[in-house]
Image (cartoon, rainbow, N blue to C red; front, side):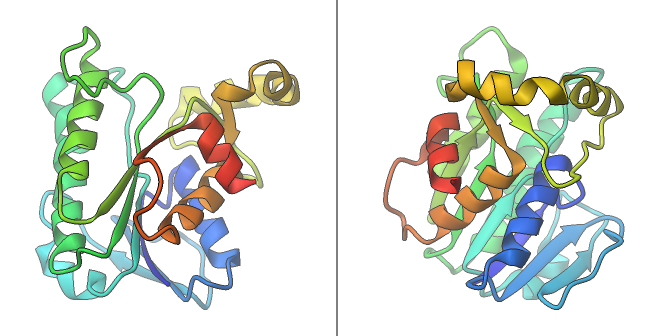
Length: 221
């Protein structure tokens, strides 16, 4: 299985990359990034690209993939509405249109989040944008899935690119085992996310298209 990975430098993307490199059924991982990831592996191929609004110049590198795991995302905090929409909706759809071109059997997994608003009518702007992105992907001619995890615990040294997220995870890492026991429906990990994405890619379009934390954890366990 050839996998395209967006967002490999982020916390979730690091976990997904690790799962892909460990899975014997994944034969190649094409990681699209602006800067080198700083790591190498026999199955890993980096494709450096600057303009995330247009992926047509690297379309040949992305052709023939079996799955695309889209883990690129940003926090809405401190960003204008237009910037957040550009990254969340614009970048995602630009990638989806190129990787899915002529490949209706492609599985596209988008990491959204708990609280995403599928109606696109709610009060929270970030949730509306996420909902609009999910809806657009699910309407495309491919096997699209949206993952809506709640609390994601980093495993195996994965770190967030956002400073205050890193601090939060350091301060609360001790709390993860307890949180898993008292509120398992809201808690998963980068390890479960990575494995669940690979599992979904093997479903051949079956199952629910929007998966929340319990389903993610079950598939990734």
